[in-house]
Image (tube, rainbow, N blue to C red; front, side, top):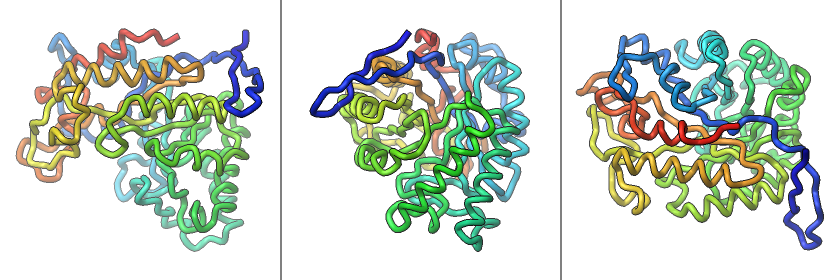
Length: 351
């Protein structure tokens, strides 16, 4: 069977694309879970029974786990060794793996795209070779179902060589190199390019039209990307129509309270940072996630969503000033009990 998609241009030409065979992706990013589990923190399901987080998530409709990967981190966190071990556990439970490869030794985002230390002095040709070999190795060792090339790469990645604004040609070449490595490993692996926010997204994806990839991933956080879900919906629709790509909300989150459970400043803590119709309550968190799922799933090329920071409870104790800045947006309450927001995933038809 095929879907008929109307291309968004003056001639309204018909484009025939294969019907999606993938289930609708319902994902949570729980990259820090191995670190948290080493602190012997106990999690509980909605019935207040002690339960492994992966089990709870999978029994509530989550079919995919998103993990970040750093090239050579200072500790084992988000290292290839840790991610491979975690990916095996994920696949053994029948879940898909969505891998966010940062191509950096640490966090990569719109404000920071630092090239790995091991690659800093390479010529561009040698850098491309290194990107290919590393990408192929990661794809083969993790067997990622969804391979995200870079994380929120609005300004490019592997800067300065892959700087979108100063080395656009090189940026595109590096993306193509990574894409080629993934395709050479497996035709079935889905390739995602991830952009943070809504504004400027069309211009960004215009620049990478020659890259072979499957999914447009967008981050959407009201605190940074605006409070209009109509704009989210319109952006999802226009991007899917203009580029004939599947669409995912690759990162999103919302608070179930404005209180805190440690002494670490939270990312969201003020009423003015919220969408007024979604209150900072368990019900409000549920309603927000339900609305985001509905927006993406309604689009004919909607691929899925991933909730960010689902595991980020106050893992370092109640008085820590370097603990979790996300504990009021986690998928678990301050007693580490699963929140009603998980029902937003379990009520969603995923195939």
